[in-house]
Length: 369
Image (cartoon, rainbow, N blue to C red):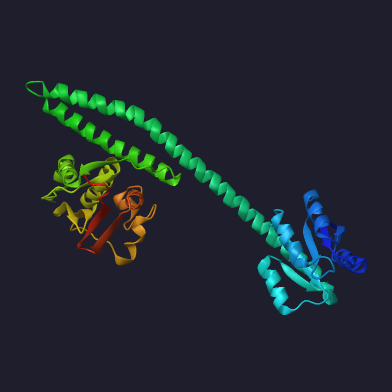
């Protein structure tokens, strides 16, 4: 005989005996505790644990739906709950099932009781395992996010020191006459690698902030047109290495109040993607004010993006190209979208497969100077 802890909500002693007998006939050594009121049920729930709650649907001072509500309110969302009744209409039975009852059994057909209880206990075990799995995953995600945050901060300190040393070395080499071209080239390459590593660390740090809800903007007045020109200078060597001609379209100032560092990161990511996916063809970078909205855009003439991929590329870890061909984390556009939305703006794409893409960052001007 299998042990079974049963909490029985039943006002009839005879019916309680029939339930206990049916459980015994089904192979269970059932320890049955019978209650008849809400107060008794609440007290019994605190004493638990219970393998199953079996409740009469209609009693003079109590009813099965109220019993179900009390069980669930007491945190018994995973306790199997089976209704038994001598007379229950179809509408009432459906309402009880919608409210969370696992099954209902007619007292005239108690042979269904044991199969109903066993099925509900199996389902409850599945629900509990799913909950525990979900909680474990949530703990793992929280630990991952904490690790990303700590790792990003820890990496940033020695990386900053390395970048400062490389800048100092560049200045020393610039003062030497004649300059050692091989050394200059090596230092320039090391500096670019350190800058790239710095961008990756900053992106990791931004991802950790976004996933933990710690994104805070620091708006300040600046000019997007000036930012465009500065980006062109910053990416001069990568553009040259890729054989890409960059055209600048920023004839007039585009001033507003935004988080300078984050907007520059978005723009740099957009231009970096254009270099990566532009197939060596010309790229346009521009900024303008249209209809009171500041726009910064990057257009390439590369591989393009299929229509079915254009929405999902702005989600986390999504990409429209094979990872082993192009690399990357798959978070750049996701970060860009969240930062743009935090400013009250948006980032969007227009693209045709094989013809290139245009990414546009739109931002309200804020309190523009």
